Image (tube, helix red, strand yellow):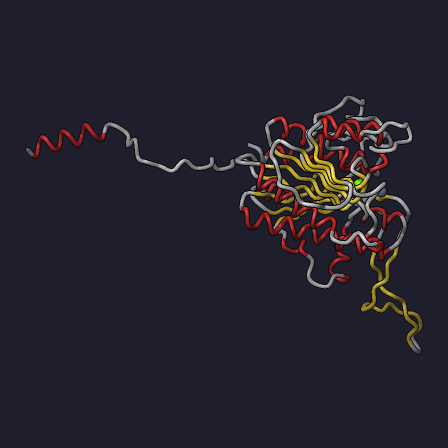
Length: 370
Ligand code: MG
Ligand code: ZN
């Protein structure tokens, strides 16, 4: 008898255990969601300004991984935002002004296009027009950044699922008398030109919030919480519609750069603090989700911005630096050649430590997909 039991149990053990009733669960995501946040014109001093002018500790101090990005374009030592963003989106160093094109003007597939092809949900948010160089570099391919009418047409053909920013004049009542309004419904895009109104998100629909004639208003002219709120909305949209697929979201603090060009420290700092609020929204989401990577970087520095000490007259000693009072200083009205910060949080974030070329950020993001 004992022998029979032994034989039976031996035979049974040859078969793998099958038919255990298991709940059918969503397949766990392999690749992480990617949130790429670009502070246009955000050098180290711009980033640091949030330490001194915010109401509380900046959100970005929560990042464990820090790197430096070398920003030169193929054509110039100092990059513009088109070549800078194309380095991130396409992985190529190109000439200043190029949108989604290599230095020889051949179109290069962007990371957004690549991922959309693989059924990832995608989103772009900017405080400039949505056709401006940085967001455009993720879905458009034109030799010159100023072709914003053409870029607007390419958006309609693109696979950007969630879009938020300004730029109405490139779609409606255009200088060329074309009106792209009817194209939105034809392409299944829910268009909103009034505000960040939430919808019952539908997976087969695209959403576009185009909320200003050109760029969104600056913070000091009442933009409010557009950037962090659009970020939260996009994440909510992805949560409800992405299913078991990851998503790719690019969020741009576009006007840190414009404060730099204007040599206006208050403008710059207001934009920096707003961008940091959006960073907070992204980090909160990533911490909860557990499989989301957040990368914060810049295309270039702008303005040669610094926070220097105020000089004061000290009796019997002459002029001296007062190290307890900060003053904004600008070295130029354009971009500079300084390296810019890269901050990363989430699974695989370690690859973003070190010093590397801006287009390596593309390669590092693509590496996360494996
Ligand atoms: Mg930009
Ligand atoms: Zn600029």
